Image (cartoon, rainbow, N blue to C red):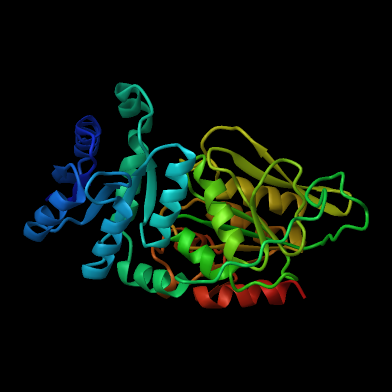
Length: 361
């Protein structure tokens, strides 16, 4: 007996991209593309007749842009939306607006060679659609409403050489760090957590599953609304109080200790649990180099990336926590970690910032 298929509507102004995405998604046994239209005006007419389970949406289209359409969907009938965006600076900034408005994920459009896209990237779009279909839109909407309209913090230039091994011996440092791993629903969840932290919060390292080039825009957005500094990590960045380092999309990030300082390394490497960056890669390095001086937190997301790494952190003496099922958009990654016995305590999203602040004292 066959299971119910995930019904998808593709909205993109390129006929070629619509064709490629339709073929790609229909190859999955549990996905059915019920329609493919060129802009949001046509999409609204189609959706009023037959509402999809997931929408794959371009962001730059004629007549109505994807962000405006996304906001309409979320106000009328919240529905999982996967943004299909280009690997450009402008595309990344627009995509951040979409994620803030309630989009559940990102896939990248083919830059060239559609056949290569079909062969190389098919797993990404299929995985994104399946993760979107598992999304609890009630929780997503609640998170989106909670993080809207935050005032930007005043611009303050960073201290000279504050982020490298060459920084002076008097620069702030810490023997403790916090490692966070998250995926679907994580962009909104991280905003909830990081905007609550003070400048004396312990140093934080983060893996959020996201394609390359988008993490820079994501970090910049968070930096503009958080009291702490948030930046996309580069090799040699120090983990210091009041700073959160986000692993770049398409790269793995690890932590190591250099004397009394923790620093990050960013490097290439094979996919781990289908991901690069991988939460497991980060957590395992934290287990090795920080051990009992670390707090590991696994948050909303599909799959099991991070579960085994968190278990290694726990075995090394670290404190561990997981976001609870009631507040997860997708209770996948925390659930797998709980199954492995890697989570010492589960707590709601709203309590995670307090845990981090308390840990730093």
